Image (cartoon, rainbow, N blue to C red):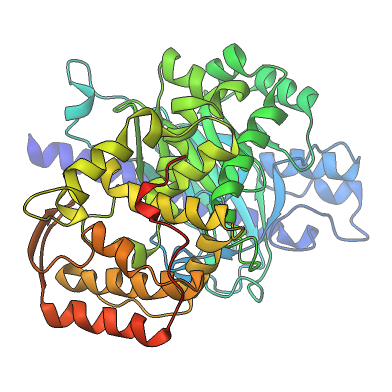
Length: 509
């Protein structure tokens, strides 16, 4: 029985492969009537009678429309530029890999079965077609958080070649041109022509308005609508856009862009002209309320969550604003500010700043973390390091106090300048050696602020001597000696920076 099943499968695959090759050959023969391998423009001199000779029916029908100038090429035919790779961004910005892998939205919905994609000007570049399964849900009876298939975004990946691509779409879905390059400025601009498939379209805030937004929602053939702004890319269910975002697409994308820009401003990317062209993706998922992974920020596809993230006036307020800023903070987290124990701390510097920008109030103040952290860390007996406090918000306090103090002193660019300085310096270590980045941070903070912050860091336990064990998505064991501390303190003393105007550990929002 097993051999029979395998034999049937082989026959099916062989049949498809044969049909694919036959179709490819027939379309390739018809290339003589077109200007390039995208088959999107007829050559000069092609007559109507010539079109009868085109063997492939889909291609022939399309050619007649080209001849009569009636072919609706919007979304079906488009040019695509390379985007900087995650590796290139990580190297330049000293961050991890968290930007969108779906940059080149096509606006085309491919149904399961055979599809034809025509590509030109590939120039041997590695380009793929991604068809993600946005609406994937756990199997019936499976608890979403315990889904054996994980929480990640599943997708079909199809390598593209110059000319004719006859592909077998496993599952219907929106498709994207995956085209990244370490040197995007010199990479060729490719052209893709979806001979088959349905047009779903996508919203581009740089050219569309709310009437376009409503039109796209009303005419959607996919359960997912793509939208992008200057910095944000979203992929949410059409049903929730209809419910919460009708007539408000411009406002929604603008508010997401404002949140991301605030984080770019804090890390100095605006000041130093380093904002990437890449987008940060927010998508739907059906496993967990909110999380971030290698594909961006994921939100649960239920009415409560979608209302928060698809309503323009809500996404910039309270917990929704904090949550998105927190997850984006993970994307933008600098490696030198993420030594062991800091994974859920340094990203929240961004959250605190964004909350302030939108007038949402201080979470540290609302949760009484200033007094709690003082009791837990500064007043502890025996003395502990801030890293030994189990509350990540208590650990956040000293980092936010630095922002508040220098802002009060008229220096709001403390963190933008500090992070630019970090980008221009090498990582001081990883794993158990990552603690060296903490000592570098201390020295750079004093340098950028032109202030001797030794007493401040001492009170918060940055100069703790001994062994510090930290569980932070991995186990860390830091061995800090008197010599380690003395070297840093002496380095700062030799700079002869002035002391702060007052005890910075007392400052609150």
